[in-house]
Image (cartoon, rainbow, N blue to C red):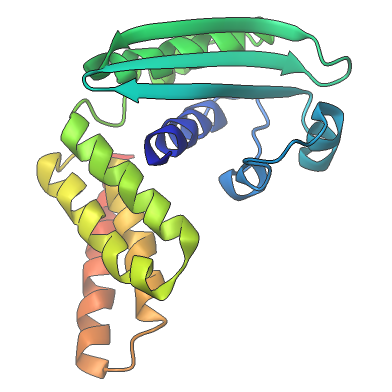
Length: 205
């Protein structure tokens, strides 16, 4: 589940950077996760014309990803594709899904847009895995998971220091943790680490 959520969030991040696309935020789109809600109702709530949905199956060192783009006004499939690849190809799969979805919506991609799609946040599977676990922990907002989330982002950053999303995730996790911290010395350390992570995230973006 965390792997699927991570893939979804990465696709949202990639598509949101493209001019000409209005992409619903993670919090809004994930609110429909696991619910059997009508396509038209979801689209109306999010204010979008298309929905990109899919599934992920992971077994040992292989992954199967199925994605489909649905037109909200009539519920018809505009595009669909399945990918069964070695796990290390997950980054290429993300790029292909994003590019195919954009093409199916007849959005004209500039050279800069194509470069953004092809520009993977990381190519290190260990860093990616740690990042998506951190995001999953962060999404629950429970005290226990808020305490653990920064460690996963730290692992991702240690594995790939140029991983901008991991630095951003660490920033968010630390700031949320700071709100729960009563000890002034620990709070100061948390805020200093968060500031450093934020500066790195901006520098690498």
